[in-house]
Length: 424
Image (cartoon, rainbow, N blue to C red):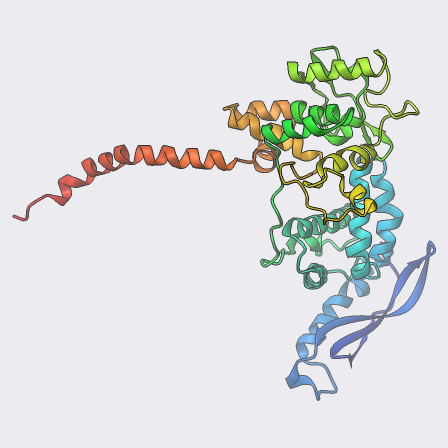
């Protein structure tokens, strides 16, 4: 968009250890363009330049490069809006119609907690690779315990914002998306590995849980359903042999399953079938309606099941067998000592990972496990869901030990003729 503006050279001055450029530009405020005086930090003042009254040549070159698009009149006035304005007024409203509510909630949380305080007032046009790298470095410095994967999520979200801005022509053609070149700090911790319940742990959990919590966990452990899919189940989805995944419920939002691949039916093994039929009879033998309903007949909130049934059953005192909450209120004479024979709670998704790991341990092919979990990519199954158990590692090393004589013999047959060759 051409604008009739006079060529400006700006004014460079030192401030708080920086060379700062003062200039004028059209800024979008309240839907109107307003000519304002602005300031831009160009570079930190080097010790040898501390007494200079005029900036060095390289700083003047930086100012000229920054002002060149403004003086050419080819910049889009919309690019003078702040990143915060663009995110709140365009980016998030667009995503409301394109992604799942849980994903959008995660994006909003990351933006408000980490990215917004650090870059909301920066303009789209002035935000460059150095500024983007500074945002990630600042987050890492102030949150050294933050894992590498979390930093990757933050970088990817900021990159999505600038992908939209680039697509709409709000960035200079020579600028592109500045976040694509940002690197994650190498010292960022990788974070704890996710957990997968073993079959023994699953059976122990089912043995101590009351109904319907036990059947809910069994659906996760023997069918591999996600938490939101379990809550979205209806009796119409179950034909006695298979469970069809037709919906997902997250925080009250009903939506389609996570992907087209997720809509596939899941086979029900006899152990789970028995539990589902017993649960149906306990509910009055319904044919329709939520499979796991609350007293109002609506889908049960699994957070309530967790707090009211699962955690009290798993966190018991090994002396008096009281749940932790009751133990505190009862004012018993001994301290609370958790029963270590009961599995620790690792979340509903640990059942899904446990199914993948157990199938792998039984020799099921990776691609078949992918099909059972209804995942789009087998690499996701291998990297995040199959958790080799310690016993598997021991068995693998035992195979190596058993094969060592044969491997050594083969190597000797290859190397011995050359080694035993006598000199002429």
